[in-house]
Length: 377
Image 1 (cartoon, rainbow, N blue to C red):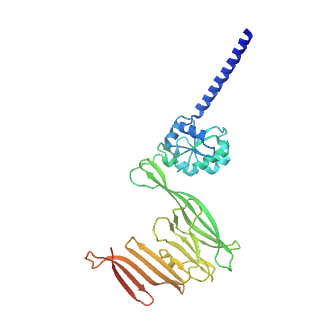
Image 2: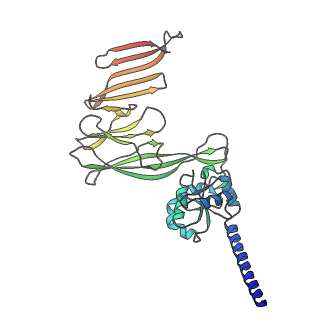
Image 3: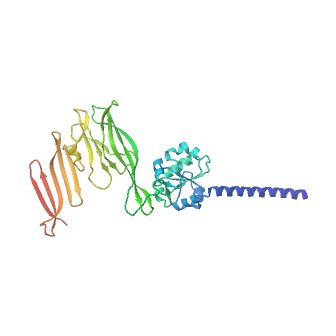
């Protein structure tokens, strides 16, 4: 009986010791990571493929307790300008290759951030695919951060006026092919330019914030179907507000002079709400086998081709009170205006309160001008 009691006591002490050691180990693990309460709740209920975001306030608490490594996944140029204090630079496109050398322990708590929060979830998923267990991202990215920022812009004097800093430029090259005539093969068009990240100061946050990303094309290189260089068109100035590295550039091909060959145009500006669409235009000249810039088309606002009537139509407006519609014919190497309609709002007589809509029709072939006045409400 005595032997049985002693054996039971020994078993009890062993089990008690194991429970204490397990609890201590669990406590040490929790202390080493110290994940914010909301993140712990989400991580237990979410699938590994669902990136967990932390608000700036949660992220700040996470950082202050010293239990997380902060990773800036933007390019090295961006990191050099400004970043969170004590952050390390690991650009997004290098995570797959370098993560293991940066973080050999895959239980390390990691907080990633980009500029706006858009790319960070993809970075978290990349880490997850590499078997990292505790990776989170800053909701809203660096633009949402209200805490201290370090880097080259750290000591800039800010004031209440709107100031933009020098833009960060990232070069790109976009290639497309196009056949301009059934008897010619496909030409290769190489567009070289920059993606430009434009920043402006945020007076409330006392730092620079991303204002806009756009693309700008400066050179078009054209290669013959056999791969030899045909011509290079440079010194271009364009701005595409929708140029967020999606390779969508407004380079179009139409037969502007109705000779059976496709001509080329490139919009100078893409964005905003204006109906005016300034662009570069080049007509294919079969005699010299080159694209030649056409100034007549470039002076128009938003020309469109009417193939059936062999005419070019152009429309332009200024506010709500002026609208112009013109038609052109291509004659002897020039686009000649043959008809114009102008609509404007006037007071008639000038010193009265009577307002009229005036329609002025001008036929440049016959010289006939017709004016119609209609009361305007």
